[in-house]
Amino acid sequence: MNVVIVGCGRVGSALAGRLHLDGHTVSIIDSRPEAFARLGSNFTGTRIVGMGLDRSALLAAGIESADSLAAVTGADAVNAVVARVAARRFRVPRVVARMYDPQAAEVYRRLGVHTISPVAWAVGRLAEALVLVDFTTITSLGAGQVDLIESAVPALLNNRPIKEIESPGEIRVAAVTRGGRTFVPDPGTHLATGDVVALAVTGGGAERLETLLGRRS
Amino acid sequence: MAALLIVGAGKSGTAIGRAALEAGIDVRILESRPDHIEEVETQLGKVVTTLGSGIDPIDLERAGIRTCRWLIAATGSDEVNLVSATLAKFEFGTEVVLARVVDPRNRWLFGPDMGVDHALDETQLMAELAVGRLTE
Image (cartoon, rainbow over all chains, first blue to last red; front, side, top):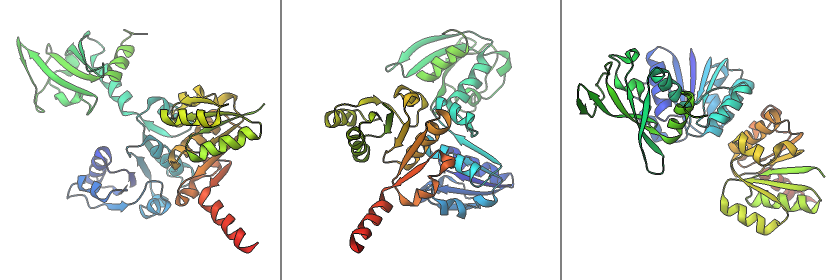
């Protein structure tokens, strides 16, 4: 498949690497040439320096023959516009846009743009993972921007790597208590049934988590 | 009296607001920078202002978009103007939507499929006026 990725940040560069590895033809656009340093040396796809709204950059990336496009710059508005124009003007069959604002993501979904809202997505995944167990808010840090939440690990997550319940910038495992001993996990730590984990969760995330679990109306 | 919602209270938005008030139009303004809200209230007086973002559907609703016949997206950012226009036309059904083109290279995006009825391309308008003066 021919894939165009707009935005070479953490998500865009990782997505490009993954799709390239899977054998797809990838073009990636970013306005900052230094952003392409995030791409691994194995990436041999096309790099285009240009603004995501720039018609010539989109054409150079092959948007006219693209099978799919991902709009993953750091700006919701740019992603929304690029995704809409890709779908409506260039008839790209599969288009997805990342939008941080869940409300705007919902509206754009109604307008026919496939949107992914990372915060809502991560909270949804975490809620799914934790929904069978109880959790307690231990403390709020700062002006409530970050909550420390304690939760028992359900059987569902037994032997899963810790990163499965983490989300960069939103959810982080701060400590694990296992068999009476509490430690700070490393990236290789695996969860075990009966562990108690302390999670640092951004304020908005914690509130949505509570809503999802029916603790707050 | 029909109402106009202006997104962005920079120089363009403020000038449009002043002209609309003089034409007897009821003006509302949505602006994300608090200091610009104060400034436009001082300058124009009779306007209803709302602090918020033109790309947030909730803020557009708070600013009264549902009661407005016209919307002019006049921020200094083309993508914000385009998103405001799209939301106004397709989510809120605003009758007439105008949007400011900041960078002429982005002019191609300002079409009916993005919710824009009329593009206000400042650079192009200025060029036409300038040449018009030379040849009149």
